[in-house]
Length: 445
Image 1 (cartoon, rainbow, N blue to C red):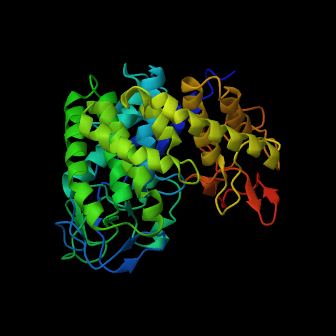
Image 2 (image 1 turned 90 degrees about the vertical axis):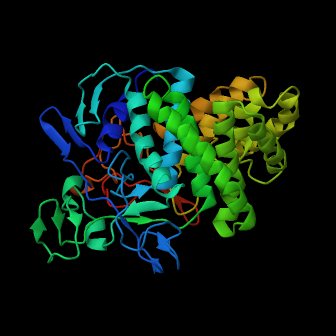
C-alpha cells in the first residue's frame, strides 16, 4: 500500500516548487523562469507584513537596497507563496538527506538541467531525482553563506500587491535588475526602473544559522559522488559558520522564541557535523548539550539524541533508555486525549506537520528501541494523514487516497486547484473543541 504513494510529492510537487527554474510538464507549463532579478538587501528599521523584520543594521557587508550577488540560483517557493523561507528550507534539505541515507531511492522521473534552468516533469534524465532536489535546495543555502557567512532570515517581495500574486511565478517580477537611475517601467538591456526585485532580510538569528549549518553538513554527505565540488564546499562552509557562530551566540544570549529553539538548533547543526566529520569536538559539544536538554519539558531533543547514538560512545543507548520510557508514557496519554492517538494541534496552525514529525521520531525510536516503541506508532501518523482524523475522512495529501484533497492553499489556489502530492496543514481545532477541515475553499490554510 505504501510503496508508491510518495511518488506524486517527489515527481510533481517538488519540481513545481523549484525557484529560478522554468518548469514544464508535457503540454503544461507550470511556471516560467522566475525571480532572475534577485535580490536586494532589505532596508533598515522595518516590520514586513509577513513577519520579516530589519533593525538598525543590515548585519552584512551590504548597504540597504544594494544588490546581493549570487542568489539567482536554486531554492523552492514557500508552500503557498513565492517567498524563500530560510529555516523551513534548511529543515527540508535535512529531511531529504535523511530519506536518501535511510532508503537511497533511485527513482528518476524528472529532468533537471541547472545549466539551462529547465525542469521537465515525467522525463527521466538518468539521475536520482532526490539528489537533484537536495542539490537544488542546497544551491540557494550555499549562496547565503558565500554572501553573508550565515543563513539569512528569508527573501520576499517588498509590496503586498505583488506578494499575494498567484499563478505563474515568472510574472511576479519583471526579471530585470532594478536600476534607480531609470524611470519606472523604463527598460535598458537587463535593467529596469521598476523596483520589484525581492528583498533579503538579514537580521542575525543563531537558530536560523544553526539550521543552515545542519543543512549544509547533511547535504555534503548526500552530494558526495553526485556533485563533489558542491559537497566539499558545503562542508567547509558549515564548519566555518559553526566556528563563527559559537562566540556570537555565547555573547548574545537569545531571547523569546530564539531562547526556546536555540539549543535545539545548535544540536541539529552538531548532529549533522559529527555524522559528516566524526570529529571529537562536535561529539563532545553535543554530549554537553543533549543530556540536560532531555530533562526539559516537551522532549524536543529526543530525536537528535537517538540519531546520535552511534557517535556518543558505549553506554549512551542505556543512558537514553529512561527518556524513551518517559516518551512512551506520553504517547499512552495521547491515546486518552483523542481516539487517533496522535498529537493533534490546537493552536492557530493545523497539525499535519506535527503529526508527520511525531511519526518520523517514532520511526527512529522503533529502530533503536523496538521493545519500547512499536512500529504501529509510525503507521498511526500515516493513517491520520490519509483520512483517519476529525471532521472528515479526506486524505490530507492531494491525489493519495480514495478521497483526497482537490483544493489546496497552493500558488494555484486562484484556479480552485492543487499541486499533486501537496500535503495540507489539515484539521484545525477551533476553540473550545470544534474540529474543522474545509473541503470547498482553498483561500484558508
